[in-house]
Length: 212
Ligand code: VGL
Ligand code: ZN
Image (cartoon, rainbow, N blue to C red; front, side, top):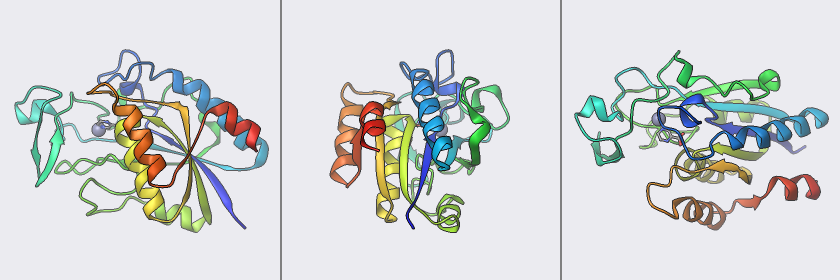
């Protein structure tokens, strides 16, 4: 039997208002997430989350590289954006948003723990060199359909969705549950197009709740 899981991507303080890498309207994703969590609770569907979880001196941090935040360079052979320090392990910034209904989250998957490489996808690092526990866990619970939303549209949501599709999951993306960094205007729109072209189905929360 097909099983579904709601995957909440990086709804963490540092990506929300007042955070180190705040995404415009990042907090607006929390209400959408809570409605989807309730929807899952009512149906006994699985809820899981990912957390960006960097060591203090992660190689993607501009400070570590002596670079200006939001410029780019090379990290371990891959093009890399240099970010402000964010989501440092065991700090408040790395915690899930306090208003997120976390009681039903049955597992949380950390990524970005290797200081030498960044990891936007919740499944693999950016070089596809190492895997998190996420795919194995989903296989174990026999989930083959994912509902994905969170932060940030143009980075972690996008790469998580693209990897999920490559791994064979059926993927629904809840568009109004996502917000983007938007380094360039239009990045979020292009990210949704990329996800859709790769096979994801895009829904608003309202569409999703009505279609089910
Ligand atoms: C993210 C930039 C750096 C994200 C994580 O969660 O989208 N973006 N690290
Ligand atoms: Zn990060």
